[in-house]
Amino acid sequence: TIARILGKQKFYTIAVAYKKESLFLEFSDSDKNTYHQPTFVDLGLIEGIIGNSAKADEYFGKSYQLAEKITDLSSREKAFAKTDLQFAHTLRLKGDCQKALPFYDKAVNFYITSEFQPYLYNSHKGRLLCYLQEKREIEFYKEFSVISQLFQQYRNEIIEEQNRNSFFDGEQDLYDIAIRYEYDKGNTENAFNFAEESRARSLLDLITKGGKISGYQTTPEIKVVSSVYQP
Image (cartoon, rainbow, N blue to C red; front, side, top):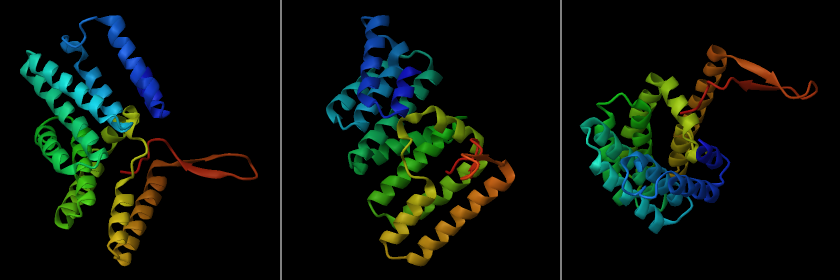
């Protein structure tokens, strides 16, 4: 959508304005129509990214209210899970992992039994970042192992979802997170091992997925094809 394109370019304020305008133009009672429940999730997420916590809470509140009104049980559960995940992201971004983690837990518990494996991956990654923030070593290593396996197993689906959801383009990949964690603890050898593993995976991707030459002839550059993505 246009809002996601704007989000990809980091034009968050314009993306919010576009979302609000679309709600106004389509339905005057948009805060009562369950069709617009996903829009309130997006609005809450964008407001959370740009630091408008009060507005984010307001939009997520409306999202939960509309989710409750969805009559189909399966659709209602999906709406709640998506809201839980994105609300957890905004809580983490403002440094409140104590509140974010229960929402990540709820999202994980839903997506682990569903077909939405990219969302399961994102739920686990959010928990990983919270464990990093709270310096919870045992949980961090356990979560890192789970996420690595998920990415390798559902690689294509995760890449597709990451390409569609542009609001978190700038987030670190898994190995950057692990390297930072080990380096901050003074475990330089472990940090180096993670760096080498990351480079090895990138090289394997280049070999198995292919690459292409770009740039001017005098300064050629090898790029991995777009399907290759770091976890």
